[in-house]
Image 1 (tube, helix red, strand yellow):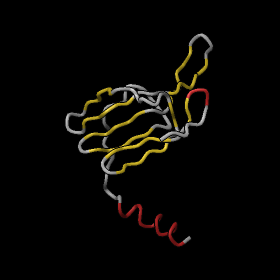
Image 2 (cartoon, one colour):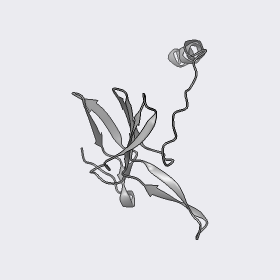
Image 3 (cartoon, rainbow, N blue to C red):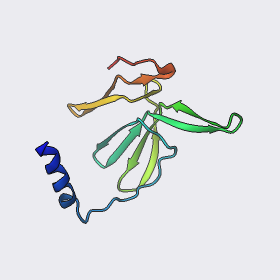
Length: 116
């Protein structure tokens, strides 16, 4: 409990005066994605996106497999090769020996992914 209280006391002090910078919009909205920073690039991929279907007047959740790289110096998005493991969201990812690994998550048809 003391740690939580300390966090709420220190958080405003540590981040006072700092601002968020808006970077260019990712070409589509997404949630439950993976992201990581490497050198001067930000990578974002996988996840899902609600896409409006005008015939049914509903939003459909589409699971994505695309990956994007944002150049922090040039401030532009570049689409990369789609994730070889297919569509997935809510994945776990980690870095080891300068390589990034994506594992587990939920794939198409809401099937659990157990691969590494």
